[in-house]
Length: 455
Image (cartoon, rainbow, N blue to C red; front, top):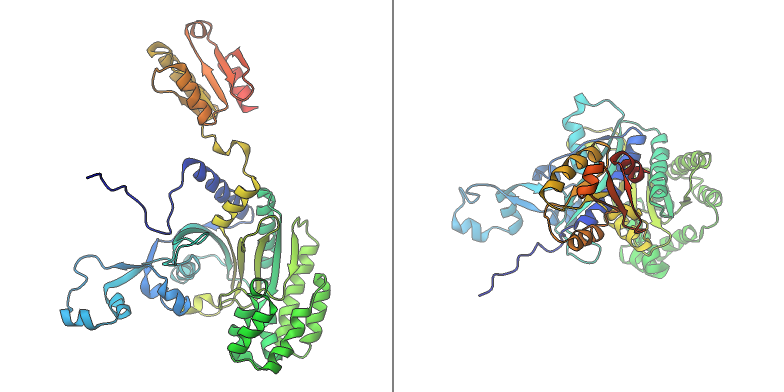
């Protein structure tokens, strides 16, 4: 009987060297821009205490947490009858004290509260780590994926929102992806709910509005009615959907509509500051005030953002917003924060579709020394040490096999230069350097080879 071929769990992936090179290009680009703005990197454990995670993501989120069985005898102290007659959720609470993190935000809130005395506020952190969700795997949705978050806590200043928009603009300029940065403010949405007399329905209204570009106005109105809004309340909300024009026109229209609503006007004021400040800066990408942008998470309290790629049909590739009391879930109220998260997996897909990766992304080495035998190999190892000291990524082919096989290896590995060193080259202290792209081959010293490859 043939051995069963091994596999990996559904919703997870292996990454080849080429895919890793592309992913590292994404992470390193984002990391470099975060650092430009003074953000410092932290990491938190893959697993957290379940008490930290449970109840922070709503009922649906709790169901999607991967729970970890307690080590040792997790049934200790329970009778068989208790095991068979206890609900799955209650059993999980007894058997599992830890779970894999669902996002980076709640662990960050826990980190801030736990390390409060050591932090220098405002605290600007970034975090690039995997998260896990027991979701149903489908195209573009995985059970294990990376998040690339940046947050500022301990500052109410709207300058932080402006800087996060600059970071988004910088990152996508570096990638060469044309995007639209969409902005809104949760206070404006709250003002709209108060304006129609249903502040209690804010969540239902925002969840429905958030789907406008996906399901259309009629279906949004149907969903609002199903969630308990009267026809009159839905009609009063309709002028909001009709607001259009440039950012200034839309701000003026919503300001007029909410002129008697303090909450809504506060949101307009915050958004005006962010948009007016961005207007004075060299922002390359479009910035759009989008009244239908709601963002699903209820902990947002101020400005919210979402980024759409303009040249590829794909969902949001970055999102975020202001939250006023995230650390309150751990008994430390009043600490305001604002953050963004880049969707690395979706950015990966966009860069692939638009073929925007650097040309040399697949090249791990820049130079390969061909192996002609033991004497030549000893000499090549010494030369390779010199090229590596000069910062050139160098390989020496380990086996003395046919030259055709070694050249195929260089070609398949996208190595741009090959060094051939035989008896004559050793005698003359030179290298025959072959450019794999042009086919040109010339005799040079090791110093000249370094200059050519570094050019």
